[in-house]
Image (tube, rainbow, N blue to C red; front, side, top):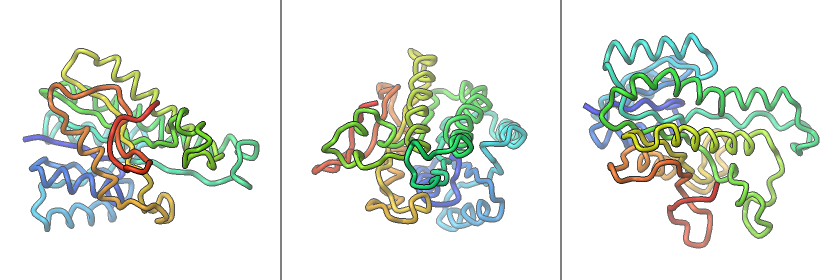
Length: 248
């Protein structure tokens, strides 16, 4: 039995990631902060025939993370896939420009998008190490790419807010460092770029669906033995609109 934990799995890209993994006969552990919403999401997938379980998990709460790790250990003994999907954009201070951004907003975004990923990953590493060939996927974004953000002719040039983009830049480095730690082992660590998807995160303004946004995470979560590690991979926002490796 292959098991996968997805944080923020009660809606949007996280939910569709769980759905697509379940369609591959993977047992999905759907983590969410809200118990009612999380359990409802599980019941939806169960009605579709999925092997799904709810895990109460707040990535900003150390006790919550520890309890989740203990439950997974007691129920399954190991973990094959970890998808750090939970993320927030944070509030836009005043006009949203760097010069208007408050440290409080930065801290709030980093608590979930960066510190929470490290906390969850470290807590679950003992379980991931017990798997035959674990996969860790951190859901990032093209807005975290310095090269793409600094291209005057690219779609990201107009963006000036720093909280969310810089948190994804930090997450990319976190991904690279974990990949280096496990280089040469069966554990592969990559960052996924879903693309601009219509979710609650952006008030449903994206042009891609949550199901499409889940595809990069599912691909990286199910990489074969000769698959890559230490990459930002996913949707490429260009005329072709395909998938591939993106610049850090």
